[in-house]
Length: 229
Image (cartoon, rainbow, N blue to C red; front, side):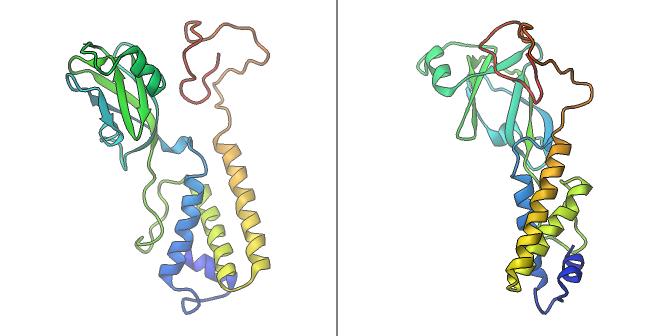
């Protein structure tokens, strides 16, 4: 990527060092991976076990078996049912904090990177978590010949395009920098449309009066991406 950027801008390592170029490319990588909360290539699934009489579980514990850890949680379920998401205050009202009631968890809330189960688990329950993992680090400190492995190959050239824009900016050429920033944003939008498109097997129903898929219960939130009612 560094060689490609330098060939386009017509510079060498004496103009922009490897370390600085790595930081430019890392910026582009971060812009891409954090521009969407639900990139499908960051989807992950794992399990964790509850502890008797413990209601709160940190995100690090919930996603301990996920490479790089979890960034966001999409859903939780036990071996027998889906655990429904509720707001933290609503859960604490229905299951007061000073209550000693325990049982199999049916509800969960999320606050300050911590999952709270309702009711408090009375024993060990295996919970399956689906969510979005944290991306691997890329850019500053990356070894030579390392590519952004967490991004599909079509994104690699977009990272390089961001690096070109930053290189032109560093070389005090705002016109070319603006042009390549525009190309970067355009290509990122194209890839976003491609990777967030409706899956082929998903049925599409427009203007339907069909009852809710999830048992007709209006309080249930949307599940994983593309759930329909």
